[in-house]
Image (cartoon, rainbow, N blue to C red; front, side, top):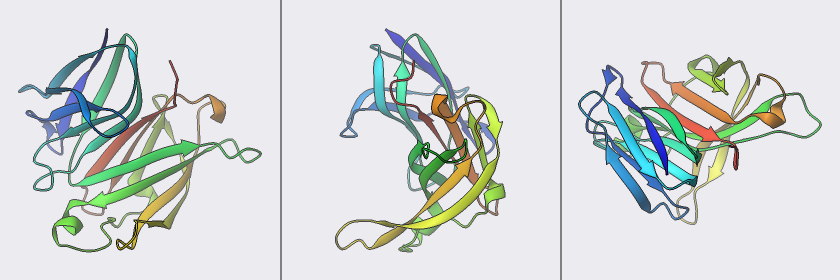
Length: 200
């Protein structure tokens, strides 16, 4: 058995009563727990790599979700799940072969305020300096940030996604974990974590 443990936090610190769920490829919940009054949680799961973990409370009312992807649950894994009114969804990272020693990162930022007001484009307004990125626990520099149109499906139009390029400590092909946070001009944030697939 493995244990996924950590904390759940909001904009003012520890946040209790956050639902933490491991999900399969179909986004179905397979294991779950709730953070305690100190914002701590522990989730015991069989050894394996889990496609998704979410942390959420009062979804669509006060908060959006924290996402972690491709969790290598072998032994003990620690996560700091931070939620607020922004969300980082669809986080992916890849290395462009033959290019600079950097990671290219794709994500879709979402804003609760824009979602609740019914706007078709729910991406928050932010700049590169509003992004914080850490690779394998070390802060990294954001080199570029570009907005791209993402096709949302028949009848749904397009959404705003982002591509950024960031520095990496060491060799880009050897990264194991990426943590990122985006803030808007009002200081609200959304965070997410991505593990390199099959890293142990």
